[in-house]
Image (cartoon, rainbow, N blue to C red; front, side, top):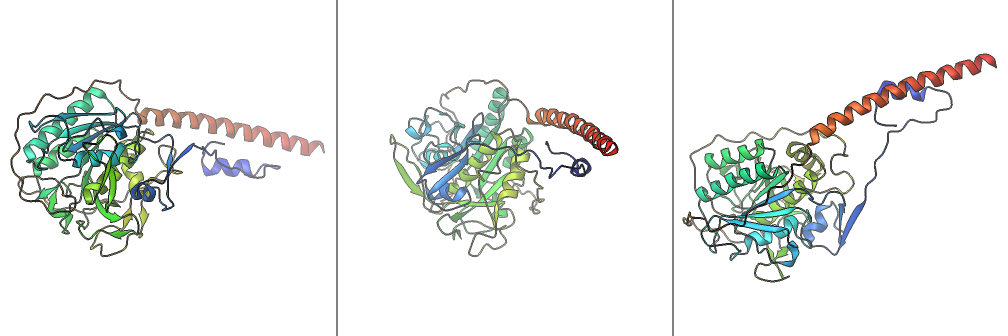
Length: 404
């Protein structure tokens, strides 16, 4: 029977001859990737040389925006699903390699979690891997514009960071999340309180710390504290090597942990969950107290994509309110969170964008809220019919008893 109220279940269970009353259980097809990268192996909740994932939650219908150094769209791991726009003046491509590596973890066919999401690179860093927040702000505004045009769920990955609390970036991220777009950001690699850096301090974003997926050891370089929402694989992570047809390389950093969580969010949202519902499921399903080492106030929550409790069919979850985060200071320059080395001060990047590859509009996706309302109404009707049926069955039982 469909899920009903306890009173209805009790009435049905009280009828003679009824052995038990169980809710309807929905099964789903599971996929498996053999011998995956250590990050993928760990992200399904177990370390067993298999990445198990829900076949209906691979990022289909979701746009994944990578705010970084660009994407090598010709790499075979992207399978023609990647495009990009340049905001640096350097031109399309990824001469630094950071953005391609990140993109591979989000959505690569070999290294990625959301293997069917559409990748849209927003190039804000040139070959040097540095840039200013004014360039990043323009890219975030363009994300907002594209998302409105395409009418599709979206996830933004920001594997970058800078000192201080940048109020302009905070407002931009708040605008995106108000549109229903998930924004996932790196905690930073300076082994300091993540509440002291941008955009990690922003409570509307999902801030990600790093651990070694092979032993769950908290990374020594990872920023920490109450502004970190979850921890994900970020030590010696293999992914796409830009400038190669199918090559890979290993990098470490919260920059590598962040796209694991962005991939999980894209997978969850591809099942029809909103940003809010997907975030709630991400936090509620995270493994508790698995990460070892000195977390220094960091919530001990390891992000996973549970293949059996994923998406709109999962049980409702209650979101724990995020810890209080500090007040906003004046804007500060933003630079990418480095992968193993500590960055030098940011240098201005050219502001004039090169010609960008246009993103074609797509048909709006059906909203999950309307589906949920229809389903609730239908269940109410079904429960009413079952209640009526129960009364009829009981009347028949009483009639038979009288005749006997």
